[in-house]
Structures are given as structure tokens and as C-alpha cells.
Amino acid sequence: MVKVSYNQKPYRRIFMETYGAQVYASPTEHTNYGRSVLAEHPESPGSLGIAISKAVEVAATSNGAKKYSLGSVLNHVLLHQTVIGEEALKQMDMANEYPDVVISCIGGGSNFSGIAYPFLRENLKNGKRTRLLAVEPTAAPSLTKGVYTFDYGDSAKMAPIVKMHTLGHDFVPPAIHAGGLRYHGMAPSLCALYDAGYIEAVAVQQNATFEAALQFAKAEGIIPAPESAHAIRAAIDEALDAKAKAEKRVILFNLSGHGHFDLAAYEAYLSGTLEDYDYPAEAVKEAMAKLPEVNLPA
Image (cartoon, rainbow, N blue to C red; front, side):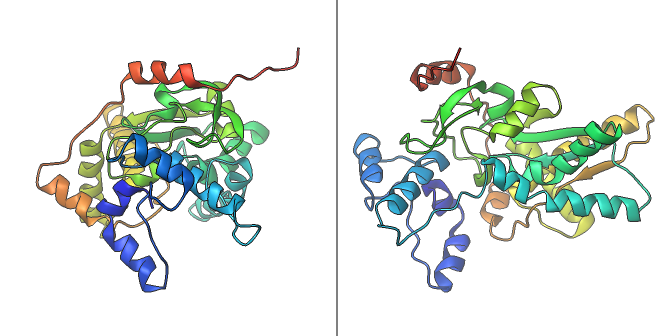
């Protein structure tokens, strides 16, 4: 478990331990790569890129006894998740409506693609004109600030090299509370679609996100996960924009999880200690010097 999430979300760890899991704060001394990270950065808060490297190392050195399955980023995972969008199409049909905009938070890509890709199909094959809006944190802005190029999928350079919007494979994010959105890159197919203009992206701040989360909780009785609250923020902004323009706008967003294990984040917001953070463009530019060299066929 990424160390910053290990500390921020103790109840997730306790939940897993209740069912017999052993949970360690990554990076740890339990892998060669973890030890190398700690030797250079003893207080490293960890990252999803580091955690992936450690997981790949454990699987690769287990003589087949352990397997590793990536939960996002890879294209086949995105396609598996499209059952969400297929169900949403049916639900919209039952409601006799069709969305003008589909919104979801985005970290590695499976959450957004899961709901958006079936609507993208309808745009491409059946002439629909639904906007597809991905929402990411300003602290980990892979699409809105990342460079579209070839990069490693993990910090130790063990995962495949793919073309994606990236902040650099050694990206260590600030300690924002939306742990699932703190990845340095994005799924290749999604990045290609973004680069071609088929989808849109926006980055939002932590405090504005939690403001929207509280508004949603009071209206709907559901405490959303910090990740999902990014989509709520954008959905509210879309509704306000439509209201200001006196437009009817059907807005579909993906509420991807509850926030019952994330109440420490809500406590930080309510106490006024939650900080906004914009990842600097200079850091992205510096990271590009460490990209892999890829020789493409002529």
C-alpha cells in the first residue's frame, strides 16, 4: 500500500488485515527496489509507480507462485470496465434521456474509460455528439500537463514502455487524498483519443473537490470517495454553466466509490488544513530528460 495512503487511510489497511492480509507501507525493505528507494529517499511517501515496481518484482522472482494483475492503465482493463458504460446506456434509455456530457475522474484510465468508451462508440458509429470529460487533480495532471511520449509504466523501469501522457516515471506525487488518481501516466488508448481530440480533460483543486463532495453528501446522503468527488466537482460546474446559459444539459457522471474509509480527508477539509497544489510545469520538463530512448521503424 502506497505509504501516504497507508498513513492517510488506516481503515482500508485494517479492513484488509481483518480478512488475513499482511499490509506494508510502500516503499518497504521487503524488495530490492524498495530498499533502493529508501536508501536514496528514507522518508519517501511512495507512489503508484513505485508500488507497481515492487509488485512486478515480487511476481517476477516468485518462480510462478505469485501473480500480478494491473487494475488500470492497460487497454484490456479499460475494455473490461466498459460494462459500466454499457449499463449506463441502458439506464439512459430507460429514463428516455441521452447525456450531453459524460464525466468521470481519471487516474490511470479504467474508471473514465469504463463509462465513456461505450458513449464514444455511439459518437463514432451512430452520430451522437456527447462530450466526454475526464477530471484529474491539479496535483497529478497527467493529461492536462503531461507530455505525450513514450515512458515506462513504473518507477523501476520493469513494466512495458508505452506511449502516453506522462509526468515522468519517477514522479512522486504530493500527499493529496485521492490516492487512486496519483499515477504518473495514463492508458495508451485513452491518451491517443485525447491527443486526437475525442475526449476532453480538466484538472481541479482539492478544496473545490471536497466542497463539491460535501454538497453532494448533504443532497444525496452518500459520502463520495475523494476520487469520485472530482467527477462531482465537474458535474456541478457543468450544471452551473448550463444554468447560466439557460440551456438544458443532461449530465451523466460516474460515482465510482464511497468515502467511508476516507473520513480523515474530510476531517482535513472541515478543519481547514487541506491544501491545494498545482504540479509545476518545470518539474514535468525536468522529468522528460529521463525518458527511455525509443527507436521507431522508418
